[in-house]
Length: 295
Image 1 (cartoon, rainbow, N blue to C red):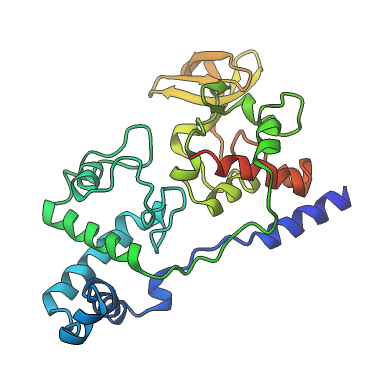
Image 2: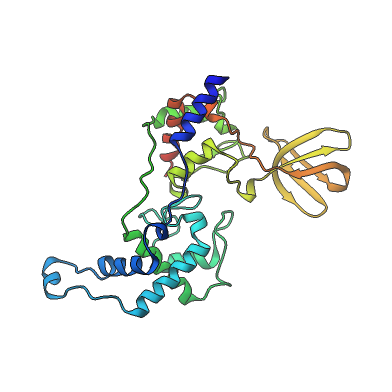
């Protein structure tokens, strides 16, 4: 037991999860001016550099980007990270865009949201010119040098990780709850293209600390029936009068709340929090490598 706890602490120390925001490293205005001059207004070639040296951005340009940054930090950074390089939302600075990479595609996603994700529609809250300023700031982030040096400390084998994921006798039993290519259980979220939808750091964090962030769509509930039976599962639907949920084994239940002795939404995930104890370090990184291969 002591050895397992020591191994868990070693893994968690190696993976110290933190968010470094751009504003910590660069003062807001000077950073925007630096990027405007050094990136947005940079010459296309050496001859142009000699003939047309870059000009300082206008106050209007700086003000528009500052407004875009403020809106991004308030509305977007919680999921996509302060530097736009992803978290529980996709990386916005690479070339892997799930719903299109043109300005009109991004505008549509911001306005209409993405069903069954944490990307809510903001079209009723933001004007088109405000969305344009957010997109301009996102484009700026994509050209900025990265400040995220996070990477796993051990290379994994994706093929072995795939075997581990679908092995019903393994300690992890991932496919009991999660699906990949329509194979697996339905209790947890499908993990198709997870490497595009989540950052590597967030994926590892979700494996080791599964209860740190729980998507409201995958909250677990626990009930105690009038017969004293305790049941726990993934909430499927809830109203003021009834609750429906599915246990880990797939069994579906529906109750009127008035017929229950107790009902509560759990603050912990159905996914175990002890994978650092259950898996070897090599198995953990094999599983991680498999998830990163799902693009």
